[in-house]
Image (tube, rainbow, N blue to C red; front, top):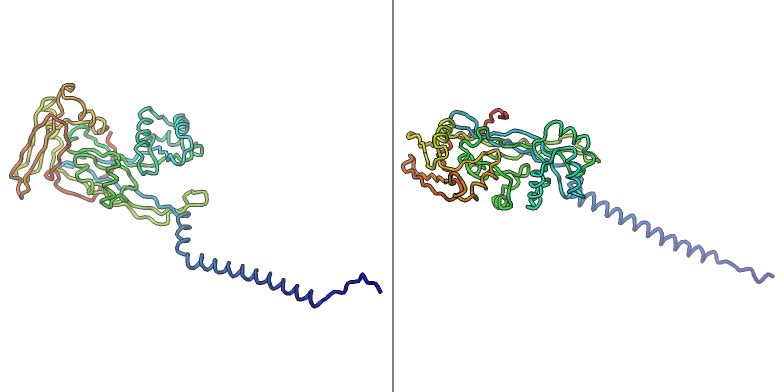
Length: 364
């Protein structure tokens, strides 16, 4: 008999095999159970949350700027209107080397030192805007040249923007006022008023004059487009559009021709003039403010305010017109001051507000 032969316990081996099989099977079933629970949680419980994330990756909401209302005199002469132009804009957070990008862009599009200085100023101000303009009012050749090389400049894009134009130059400029870029204070005020969302498509606001006084009426309501994009982020189609509401047109009691005659008559002489229509109390002409050219109002405004009176041929003059709050304009008073000050706007300038937009023409 061979004593090296080991007798095997088949019953015991079968028991351990079945035990291991049960343990592995239980682990697999438990894993599937966990997956099913997770699947139910994601697909059913968190359905709305993940559906929103998926839609955000697929659909972009693009604000559409409304047409700002026109400003016209009593005879329908346009004092302020809009025109569209292309703007080259940079999103600093998407650009690795900002200075090198600007240098490379200058080989395709003319970028002057003034453009660069303005861009740096806006960058330092740190507005909450997605992009900052480096060059405005591009011509068709510059747009086409950049479009061919767009792949070289991530974070740089061309957008169509509306610009304000004042065809009469400095005539009645102290009455009309001008629009300027939103400051930090403007943004804070808009947030306090709950109207910041209406400025998501444009970062300009009325600064002085009627542009500031009737900002709410002239501004309009921002529209939105829901754009579907592909995996590369390119636009596929527009799913939904909420059209913007154009601002109201402002029709003034002011007579542009009479205003021009009055300003030319004063020339560089100091003084003031208020021409009023007695039957309505409407201001037909107003002279007494050191006017500035509205093509570049902020710079001219600053120089007029900061320059000492002794260094100017005519000291900056401020005319404040006050009217009594009564059915008829019973009291009108005006005073002069040689100190720079803010412009005052009274309601007797405006005769009507209209939603209808006049044809948007560019006045050269």
